[in-house]
Amino acid sequence: MQPPYPDLPPDDQLAFLQLEREFRQTLDDDVRRDGRDPALAQLAYVNKVLAAADALGVEALKPLTKPAQPIEKTAANVHQLRDEIDQVLVGLRIQMARHTPTPGAQLAEDQQFRLGALLNSIASEIGNAPIERDCQDEALAAVARLRHELEAGTLRMEHFVDLGRAIAGIGRVEAAEAEADKCWRWFRVAMGLVSQSPSPNRPFAHLDAPQSGEPASQRQADTVD
Image (cartoon, rainbow, N blue to C red; front, side):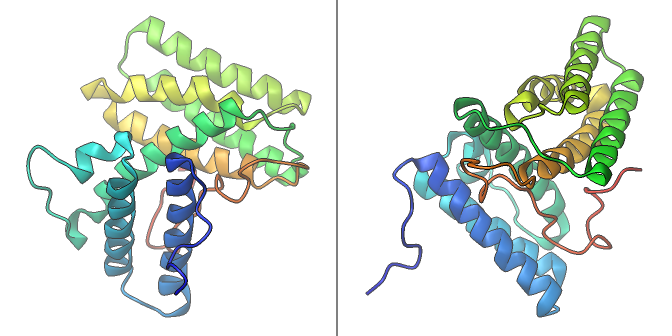
């Protein structure tokens, strides 16, 4: 009998990313094609992702898979759970990209414009965030480096590492959580644009492109306010 998830790679984190991709595709199909209640479809996605993370020992998701206090997994808090999962996914994709450098992204003109707008939005939120000047300068410098790579046509997934780390630092400042949340949303969309570019021989290209998970009317994470 064929196992339900055949051909999983031996690396646990890579296997988790592959499974999450399949679960996300099922979520998209449930919502967009079958018309399933988005909140219930997302809850099913969250439960499957956390089960896979627990089975594969994904450390970054242990606060959700083995919480100190029970977590109520309901449709009412599914967006918070998805945001926490998304942040872990971004981190894992960055690690994969950093350890396996990829060719520069080949972006169409409209994609370059879109990515530039996303970086501008991130920079604006960082500039308004109530954080220490050194932290702010570090984050803005990371945005500036991405802009430079974009203009030079040499932007790669691993170039997002510093900005992801900077946004995570902003998110640890309680007063700046709202700004960090917006930055994370735009950051995920920006990574998606690069990961979907037609660069040749891109390792893990089938794993690292974020998807919305539901129609835009249900989830506003992929828009620039």
